[in-house]
Length: 51
View (cartoon, rainbow, N blue to C red):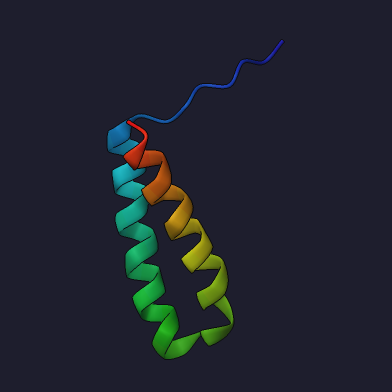
């Protein structure tokens, strides 16, 4: 049986920084990725706010 472990706050913060960087880059170079990155950004911000 596999158990799910929630990522630590530090891991979430690190991923949020990566997504923000990728989002800034996508706005210039890959506009088709902006929506997915924006959604992931919102999800991560929400997860961090719950902690």
